[in-house]
Image: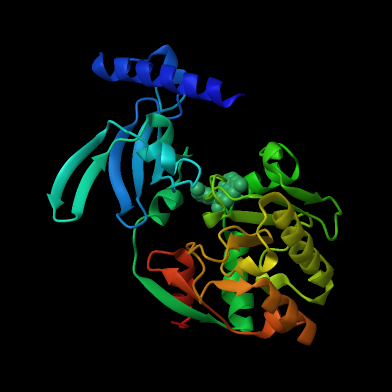
Length: 328
Ligand code: DD3
């Protein structure tokens, strides 16, 4: 679908939804069947950040027929692009003076719609877990020993319903195939590199890609040993080369790391612009791929034996398991 068609469709939907909102209220309209946020009713604001220019919303949308569905909607103002800033300023009539004092003045600028984009991420149907995830919570550090992992964390992961359908969709080319930047199809040392959801691909300042391993069943850092070195080195080398080729960003300007705990239990590696302070780059969560490779070279069992420190939210079931075991 061309961008123009998408924009036109968006406009059409907007008019229809406005008509709907001005009308009888709950009545179904033809647009209601298609619009991902048809009949959106705000339930609560889960979180907002003035600094990040984001807001996380919980609401209900009309599902199939008469039922309603929970949805999480994340709105985020898009970063500026060097290519369009001149267009933003050049004799723009929508520049309204707010105050002037000496050499200082402040204006309100109303950008043209195409430069006023807002990234909108929708999760629907959203589960209780999705909804809770975005509410701010007190955090607590866990010091997970190798034994703790075996006795507490692993059984918890195995008992849980952690759907990674979206990961398999990518690996099986059922979704996002057109977004793949690089693929090594080898079943043992292969992976797919593609832009993460968090990145709109319009500026490299906040470049963010993920490498998803073709081998399945490697849940996290804890499962890695020397057998995985060829896979990890491959991801590092080919990932860097592909990013240099496509985006012109060199390997020494990338922060390449794994999360522990990860947000999904299938081996993946984050490639992020060094200057971008992405969430999850904190010392208690990010493990540099180069360090991981070194540690495994020193000791194949490094990650089965070592104590890993990470933060858990107050309401997380895993924290409860550690409490029950008298470990925190
Ligand atoms: C996710 C972690 C997961 C909410 C949100 C994201 N990159 C993804 C589905 C497809 C993707 C990702 C979970 C889910 Cl916003 C809950 O991330 C994804 N596709 N991070 C890409 N390319």
